[in-house]
Length: 116
Image 1 (tube, helix red, strand yellow):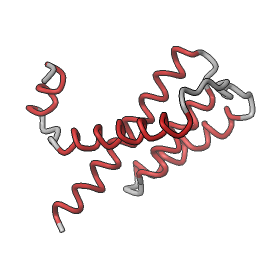
Image 2 (cartoon, rainbow, N blue to C red):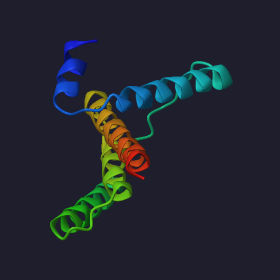
Image 3 (cartoon, rainbow, N blue to C red):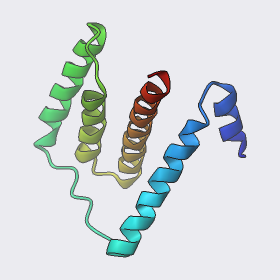
């Protein structure tokens, strides 16, 4: 167990998160089997995205302030920020943030099963 994982577990991060990571790795393996190693253009950084990103951020900020935030809207904001990015270093950071939101969303879904 890495020091980061140990810290996360001590901070309340569930061991169920490990199962999610394993599911993601399994799915990535399936993609590799089906499609092989892939290389595509990023397809990001178009100027028209700016307006949409700003609108999504405003909507999410408003929803968060008024108790109406939801996972789909949060993820959409992160994905839109990724689509807006031209710089590869910043794009990578935005994609990791998107992946973290997806991870958190799956954790939330799984926690509902534990409570039910």
